[in-house]
Length: 531
Image 1 (cartoon, rainbow, N blue to C red):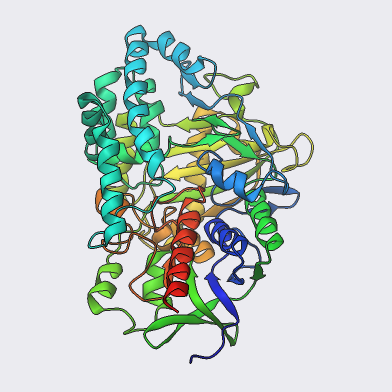
Image 2 (cartoon, rainbow, N blue to C red):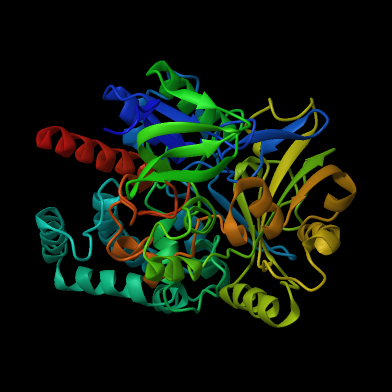
């Protein structure tokens, strides 16, 4: 017999997916220990002070994709989570007088019609096509994809997928194929002609995606950002009061209420392998033994740093060494002495609660990508700014504000290295915002700038990839993280993956954690039957 275990399950990392996984396992009576490198839970979903008196979400920064079943099962609202909706979903300014708003209550269609009546009719057709495809995606968010080379369960899953597709009309099936294979621009050009209208929808195709909206496959990335909801409103965007860390804190309370032990400030050095299976982890000078090990880490970090050499077949190690992982994302928080005043809509108003997208056309986004590839980084970057203090006065002192800046494209490899170029790029980004909102630069009284290298160092996001791996057709669904192991069971018995490198991918969804827990529990039941 093997040596006794400290826990039934040890989870590497206390990011939000790890917390979700821990909750579901502990709710079934399992003893769960989480080992976290940082002094706080949440992974990239954290709120931290970045300037005296100013707090903000540090990496992930908005709420929409968090799964409603996870919210309900974990009773997150009872554990202190409060989500409020943006009063306007999106605001696209220009450096002139034109602008576009989007939001609930018919605002999106009215704004599109203000710019182009023909595009308003196109919006109806586009929305119908989008919803038919999103409906299929939603069915698979909380399911493991069919596993290549799997058994009867995977065959049944494949049949379910086939039945879902067969229930679509012929035209809906064409939409499905289009969204999975074409560029976002291909689809948007079919429905819209106005630059701002195309930009409104095209932005989602490049969020965290180092590509152009003209890149084949970018239409799926667009889909990935629209299947969510906030505060029970499908497709809406919201803010967690207290920042994204409030989500993680509520999840930690829910998990601890079920008996989960969370060990902080303790980096995991290596997974313990005995008898050809994962048997625990080495961390902080001791061994935490467990019957099953779940990794809430980036797949490359898992296979290149944590799994002992020789523990998986060499072809697996080679394949994971080439896992594509780069978002080309630069993330900033800034402390402001006053609200920004945009040339195109200068007065304070509900538009300042929106996601403010500074990228007025698909062509602009394409040039941002091209210049990053040819000149080191985007000379005219794509920027989304949020000013969450317009919805949440806990983040800044009275009459002061905080803003999040999510910026693209800034590759991981840059001439001279990011430690030498970070501040130069931060100044470049602030100057870009100042073109749309003159006076913005002079209102900045403090800032935090995180390059792709900083995101890797701080959060374990290899290559600075916010999704734990590129969302491309070769790294999706049954191929995430690789064919044959899309069911959260890794190619080392007893080892599971519950992070964003597993289906359905990145974003603060909780879905990979939920699904990985189901795999662990299913295997535990199977082992009990065999005894």
